[in-house]
Amino acid sequence: MTQGHVLAVDDNRVNRIALSRLLRQLGLSVTLAENGQEALEQLKQRPFDLLLLDIIMPEMDGYEVLRRLKQDRQLRDIPVIVISAIDDMKSVVKCIEMGAEDYLPKPFDPVLLRARIGASLEKKRLRDQEQEYLRQLQIEREKAEKLLLNILPRPVAERLKAGQTVIADSFSDVTVLFADIVSFTRLSTNMSPRKLVVMLNEVFSAFDECTLRFGLEKIKTVGDEYMAVGGLPIARSDHAEAIAHLALCMQERYQRVQLETGESLQFRIGINSGPVVAGVIGSSKFQYDLWGDTVNVASRMASQGLVDQIQVTESTYELLKHRFRFEQRGVISVKGRGDLMTYLLREPLPAAADDERARALPGLAQSAS
Image (cartoon, rainbow, N blue to C red):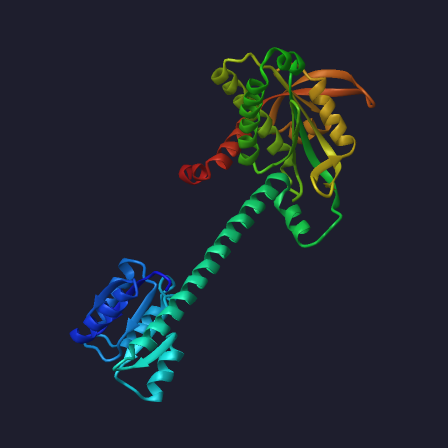
């Protein structure tokens, strides 16, 4: 017989002793209760695999115990065999309708009770196995969901799960950011592979925190390059401002990583605003990516930027000039685009700085009012 812990409830001491002896002969662990109230207290204190329940008892009868048991989310799956001196069909039907597994009249037949107990415990074991399987299945689903959201923005992931096979969207107004480490090739040759990966993980994890802080989308990392965007897959009017705050946050975190790691690192950030096409490519190892001239120019702003500076195009400058302080770098020659006017992002103007702090600390604005 399946091993288990049984709670036997009966107000008659002789019946309790008989049940206890029978259950222990079957190799089961037994707990006894004299009435319904005591039974409920026992059920809440420890797990049981089966309840043997009398009907007529002082303080609280078996019907009430059964009713409360089935209303409790934690206890409702415990099987119940009613053993009662009430031997009429109305009582049997009532107990079964209330959720009892079985009903035996007193005096009970030990052989029949053994069979009923064995069947109930086996059903409980199978039900527990099913619940554990469903729990493990839910854990795996949550892991898969988390992994998918590490690859794709949530709205895009939902579209894929809904069965959409081709995802390609045009966005007329977004801001794209690229950040790359200067002289990465030299660093990679002078550093052990493990140390290089640890260093990149420190840097990009810090960047991820900044990206999450401002509600932006990280698109990808390629080698020493980090790419993020504001304004998609859900449009937002402050996309350029959010990306500017991201760049400044990345600049600050990068300097902190240098202090923590002791490495002398330099980097460049480039930003550009305009239209892009975004979509999912691949079928097995898919990726959400961006295409368009806006992306290409943003990448050039980083690769042709100044060390430890944030370089932006004129289109981004026009969106931000009333919110941030800039220094004009001047015209530079950009491959494939010719001469472009560029600016170096310095810091938020006072009003923008207050807004940024309010976003980072939602209670700030309320406490100031």
